[in-house]
Each structure stands twice: as structure tokens, then as C-alpha cells.
Image (cartoon, rainbow, N blue to C red):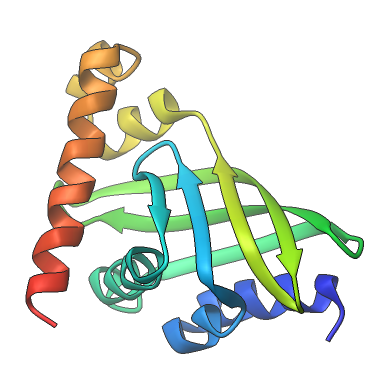
Length: 155
């Protein structure tokens, strides 16, 4: 499988709600980073996707485009539409992803998006007023990590 195909498989699996399909694209030593969770490694990355798909309860729309990859690096643009489970608010998130590959798998995955824009949608007026602040950003990360730890303890 070429690296562009790996990225396509990742997002097609995501769109279908298939966590195992997504996880099959990753090296066992995967490192993931995004504005909400920060840096995650290995099993935490796999559990993050399982948790997010489970929480979406099938109400998730994933679209992706502009996929490019060579032997070592890749990138893609993707969007996610869903209801944020904590508040019941609808979110449309536009993300730019970067990938590093090793031995036919993704070894590093970084998602970049505007956390303030996300927080305004997901958290409402609190996100609008405070979502740009370092304190709110730390609070969002703490909430996400706590949710991941709770999910892991239930597995």
C-alpha cells in the first residue's frame, strides 16, 4: 500500500466509524498530537480514536481531500461534523494533518486546527470569551485527557 493509500484508508475508516481500520494504519509506536489532547503515544492514540468514535454514536461526518504523500511524509486536509457530547452543541472542525511514515505505517500524526474556533462551537459563550486564553486551553486538554483515562479504565 502506498502512503497516500494509507491516509485514504485512515479517513475512510474514520468516516465509517471503524476504529480498528484506523488503527491498522498506525505503527505500534505511533505519536499523535493535536490542540485538544496534546501529545499521545501508542495505546493512548488507539484508545483516543475508539473513544471518539464511540462517543459520536454514528453521528459523525468526515470528509477529506488534498492528500499528498511521498516515501517519508504526507499531509491531508479533513473536516469533521459532529455534536460535542459534553454540551450537545454542533461542531464543524477544519483540520490540516501531517504524517510521517515508517515501514508502511504512520509513525507520527499531527492535526492542526484553530482551538478557539473549536471552543466557540463546542463550548458556546464560554469558548467565545475564554477559548483563546492559555488557561482555557489547559482546561480543554485536561478535560480531554480525563475523558481518555475514564474510557481506558472502562475497557
